[in-house]
Picture (cartoon, rainbow, N blue to C red):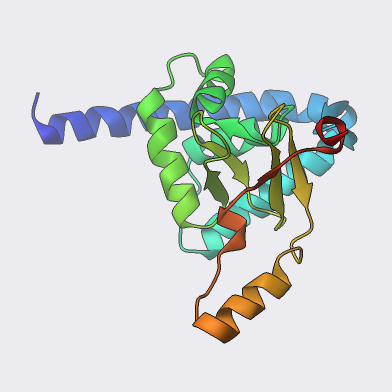
Length: 189
């Protein structure tokens, strides 16, 4: 099959997914509006999660990106997940619960593009696969080397270190890209 034929097939598949996603969104809208769900350990109104998805999709538009059905499904899967940090395989599994024929490579390409747009952050937290999380709220990651727990730290936690490195070495630190390793409170005692 030629490259153009493969592209045309992929375009048709994406168009079919858009139609299916729109129909599913229309069907789910009334139910999601009134329900509550557990999200990241907090009880969140379903509409609030929809608002967050809308804000993220608006960021994509604002950065010159297109809001495709694929991107919408991935953002929604990440927002709906119980965990804040997801591997690409976690996201594939979540999306396939809604769209069983979804291609794994589409998730990887979409995650790469969302990272370029600043919508998701890719992090290598431990020895396993990279994890992704929505970058709607800046924070640092504290990783326990013993139990593997990941905690969030405030975004200004490394400001003094970043300022000192910039002043003494001219080095501009990207602290959000680097997890901080150590022991959590439970493992340290």
